[in-house]
Length: 44
Image: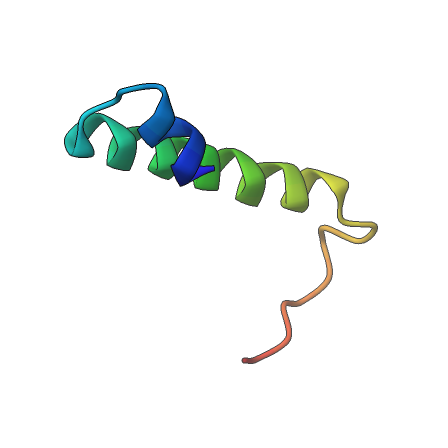
């Protein structure tokens, strides 16, 4: 993803902001897609 942002000509600051946004979207979607969102989370 970062390579595409570099090719798009985004500054380093804008790339970081965009990557942070993408990461947050992926985390949220993973949570929403989880089969059992109400189960106790397992330790790392």
